[in-house]
Length: 163
Image 1 (cartoon, one colour):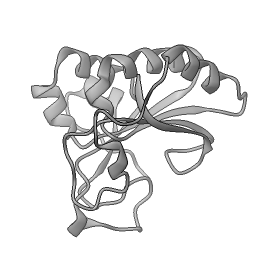
Image 2 (image 1 turned 180 degrees about the vertical axis):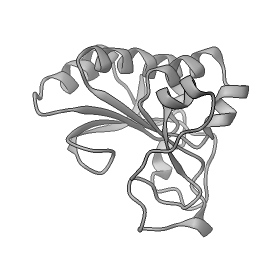
Image 3 (image 1 turned 135 degrees about the horizontal axis):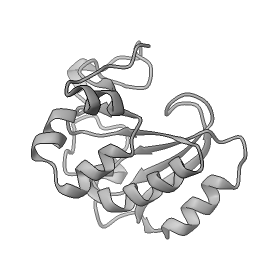
Image 4 (image 1 turned 90 degrees about the vertical axis):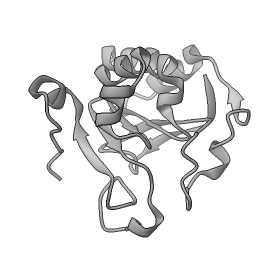
């Protein structure tokens, strides 16, 4: 898995104490991106999924896994493997993406749609500098949404997380 970094015990990427994996590589290249060093797909480091899993599960206080970017859906198969292991360990999974939920459903690859199945909450949409805000929890531009993925897939429509 190509990553830009990881963070333990984060409270900024979802509720509770979270293990955050910052993926390397992003094709969106949003103006004003908070993590531009993670855009280059050739940057970062290769990190074995098994080691990420070991680090994630070594802290008994961790209650969630979060993927951020770069773009997690650019490494969908690797993220799916880690998300499945996290869910088996009883952790919830949040993911930030520059894609919209609808675009992933209609135009995503099989691997991207498989990753969606393992995500509890998806923060979707590109960062839009003109929509920047500090007033919304867990997202930084007003166009981004907090989507309850499982409920949305079951109901066949986008269900937002009540904040």
